[in-house]
Length: 137
Image (cartoon, rainbow, N blue to C red; front, side):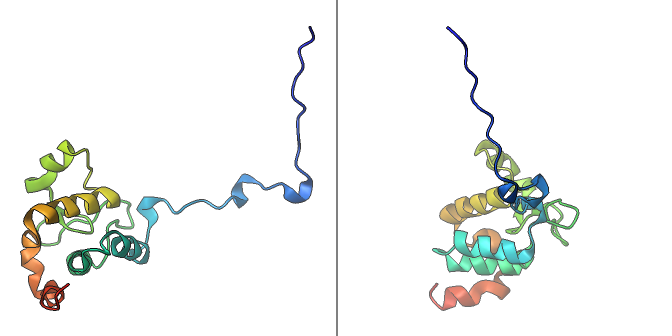
């Protein structure tokens, strides 16, 4: 029995694409606030007040230009787009398998908090977002 090898197929030159030409997704840490805002709006479409909270807490910013997660100006243990306090919530987030430094997990933990405590964890910024609650959202 003679072993056969598969023929090598080469695409025509007009179909060849160099690796530099292949579109790449935007890495999470290079997302702009506009990208982050779209993600937040989609994730919390069912809880509009959380969209307003994200705006009030971080202006829809999660990652700084350095690639690190946004920290609170007044309370440096607040982190990310939802400004979740790592001191109080870091261990619980880790037990749930969440990393508050990533946008997706920051949002997931915010939803977890909201289902248990409502908007209470974000009461310090209530003056900014309470209009949404008053409007019945």
